[in-house]
Length: 342
Ligand code: MG
Image 1 (cartoon, rainbow, N blue to C red):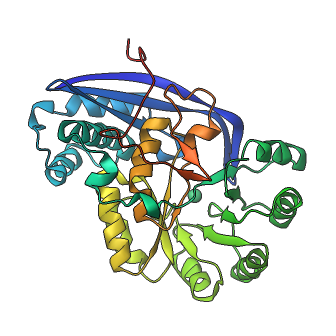
Image 2: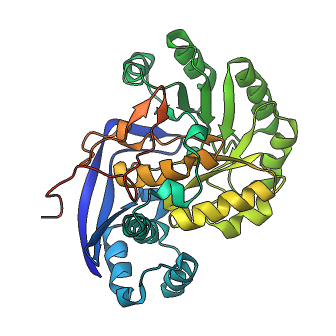
């Protein structure tokens, strides 16, 4: 197994503002694994608030004994091994997992979506995220979203209604709302849920602080719109205490340490009767295609990474009528990016 990696700064089209910070780019570590004449690609997207960075990613990779990974890959065993090396580090673990899944599909000559049992006709539409901004900038951003059938809006400041009114002055498309833990008062929050319901909002992500389980559960019992946990859930072990406290969960490969555990989380959440949104960080086509392969197993998708960034080094995934089109190429179906690893 030969490992190459490349540090890559993924630039955002628009400075990205959510309720607690603003940023203009995201550090990625792109991974290439050569094995038995096949090549698999993986990606770690290390958004600052998750605590990983180039140094931690390289340090983790240096600990891995790659000779343990022999096809057919036992992903359960592989993840137990990766978790035994060090806790945390979900993004670089995701990079390894995604590269091995791409490799697995190529060795088996099968697309990843088939290996995970995804039916192409169950692909949900994916949303396009519009960050908090002035009405003028929001109008500009929505021009970029012409192909999308759902818009995701980041709320959680004191001008939430104004922002929705601005969006509504430009488009009648259904909306996902992400409050990013920004709401603090239960009564105001439930009033907002009803108001947003009238505005055509389909779901609300993480309305209150991730540690405020009671507050979020109180809202879930009363909200006319599904309440979805995002910051409150990373790995599969987090799911147990969320049963009943949220209508659903937002699974992201950079939180779940990749495709294997994301799939396990989908199965577990379903057994709890929970809904599933599959989301992303700022990502190139590598991690986006990995999410797309699992998206038909979910209720909603928010996989807009490549569309919000300026320098995706790979071909953009194919999209039609607001939905990703699954590639029948083996593995993830990644194309482009020649020469990237030198
Ligand atoms: Mg979110």
